[in-house]
Image (cartoon, rainbow, N blue to C red; front, top):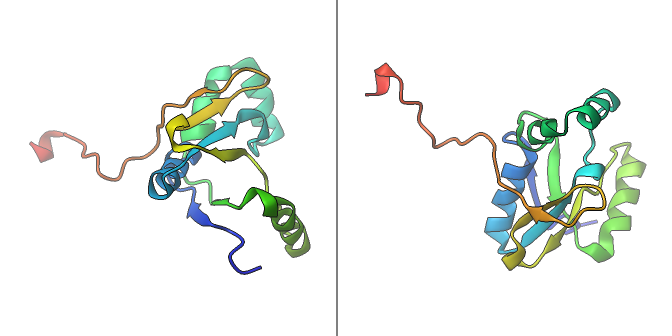
Length: 131
């Protein structure tokens, strides 16, 4: 199974933000599928009523999950390995050409560019103490 993941990152800053780190380092783009995101049934039901909550699903951090990329030809192998180890894996999108950037597909709609939001370690709060 060596070399199965080609990139991996923890989701401490949100799936979109952390995926963007992988994309920039790898020189590729990606398409995320909102319907494939592993969300709880309660959150998914609320998302159906409040579509704007998708921003929270994509930009919220501290998910304690890993996000990885696997060559398309080895996805089934990765899923089987996860099942064998009792660690469910979820395919949430696909890697694309760099020029496409990061896009989001919601349902059957056409993929649209995804504005990346998430925690920014280098953004400084400008309160009174920092002036």
